[in-house]
Length: 120
Length: 107
Image 1 (spheres, each protein chain N blue to C red):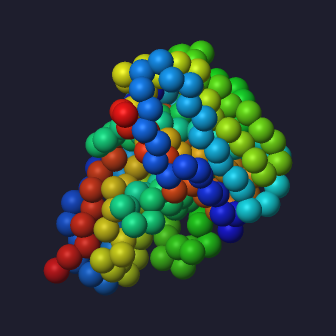
Image 2 (cartoon, rainbow over the protein chains, first blue to last red; image 1 turned 60 degrees about the vertical axis):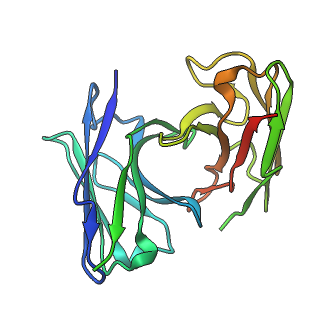
């Protein structure tokens, strides 16, 4: 049974960097059939796709966040990570990691989500 | 970005009802359309991908249709566990975008 689990600080100060890690268990992050992605959800903007990464390290970012986002993958640990720089209160959200089918682009497994609040 | 618009935004129905939710894309997305169900405090759950293919383990009362820019999600006979919020998502182009959601509650 594939499981994804987000981890990282729940509180980040404005202008600092939000860092989250997603640990994948029950399956390999090195599968050629999937991307691994981050999605966030706020009451105001709903669900927003942040970006995806392939096990090779290829990345695809939402253009609206591209200048502030970096994703990385560590196949030895079966983990992938998100860094969002220069955060503001608008980045307060529930952040989800998910596995995305390479052909259909659908997210078939999601982590439980983690609330990140940006506040001083 | 491709805009996804769902209707209605909210819907009240009863157990046993047939319910249809519509999703419209701002341009043609072929059949690159996925549907999710989300319950309060939980992650979205994939129901349908490729506009009409049922994800493994999803009950057959759920069905999806459409192509181009107009899509539907139908629940043939509502069950108590189906009261939730439903989202469509286009995976045709980057960035992938979601509809604003349709909240389905009990009448």
